[in-house]
Structures are given as structure tokens and as C-alpha cells.
Length: 140
Image (tube, rainbow, N blue to C red; front, side):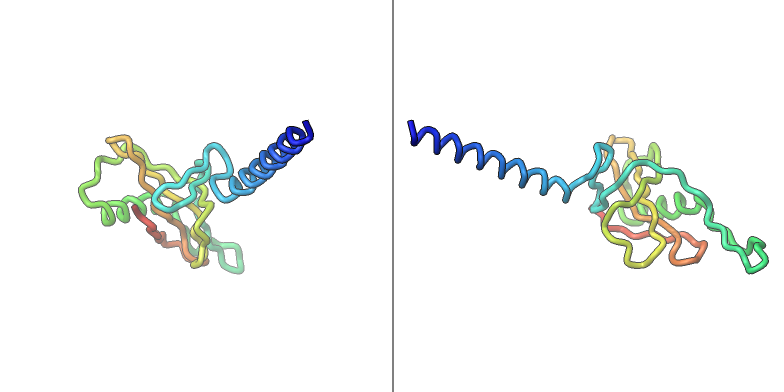
């Protein structure tokens, strides 16, 4: 009976360690049920975009980066990366969770749903304090 007790204890410790390791490893993947990896991007939930407005010292608007320009830039980048892809049914901006932003201003991932049901992703944002859209592709 002593051996059975040790085996049960060892098994309980092993199961506990596996549970701890599984929980720790879970921190490396998506953090919420809506988070997923698409084309190398860890994509968060859908988000709204606000135009980037640059003002001078007198609070007068001198430049504006428009959200629709981000969508247009992502569309162009997708067409360039995947020529002949199925028709884009929808494109929506999502929070960018990773990879890290090394340029500054890369706030979103544009996620496209294609006619064949597949999805594609392109990173998009405004660099530094600029108002022109730029894209980054980690691609399939």
C-alpha cells in the first residue's frame, strides 16, 4: 500500500506540474478568444480608427491622416503581395498585438476576408508623427 500512495502522490505532482506548464505556455499564444495569428501577426479584436490630426502651436490643423487611407494602403499591399487573390469581401482594422512595432505608429492589422473564406493580414499605420499610411507585411 505504501508504494501505491507514493505513485498516487507522484502522479498528482506530475499532473500539477503539467497544469502549471500548460498555463505558462498559454501566455505565449493568443490572449483572448478573439486573438489569432494571421500571416505572422498576432491579431487582437476589431477596433475603430480615428483620423490622425496634426496641429500647430496655435492648435490649427495642419495635416490629417485618414482611416480610409489605411484601408486603401492595406488593399494595395495585399494586391501586391498576393496578386490574383480571391475577391476581398471585407476588410477591418484590428488591434496589433505582435510582432513588436520597430518603426513607430504601426497601430493596426488590416484583416481581409476573401471570397474563398480565407483571411489575410497586413500591418498598417502612420509612421512616427506623419499622416501618410504605410504597411508592413509578414505574409504567408
